[in-house]
Length: 144
Image 1 (cartoon, rainbow, N blue to C red):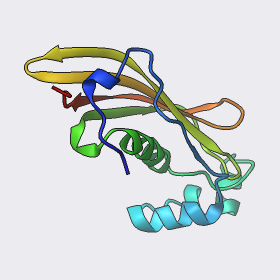
Image 2: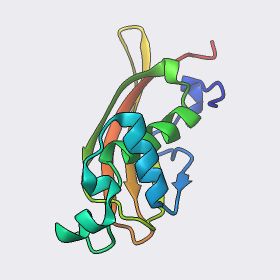
Image 3: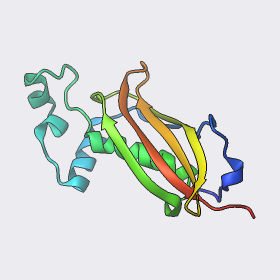
Image 4: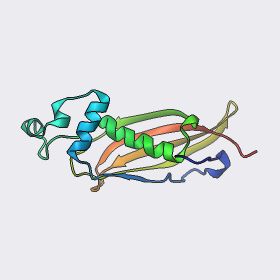
């Protein structure tokens, strides 16, 4: 759970705490399929996935990896302050991958009565292969 954070505590270039998830395993893919209702066999059936060119079998849902990014953000910034969160899916996550979510503050400004920060985020595997890139805006309270 995120602790209280204030606008004055943030500086451009500051890194958010990293989150490490994994290694990914097939059961995690199947559980997410049940939670999301997306039972595409590419995510749940190793034999099917191999027949369509996935050498390690079933791949993770992109939205699962996006969920990891969201978890990293809301562990640092309370979700009540989150104003925008968007991602671009950049690569497939295979079984056995360990995903690390990182991010940094790229802008900080007061505008329209809000104390806004903008951060870029990224999820990559143990080889540095990027799976998700994105950004978010948060409106933080002031200490004063």
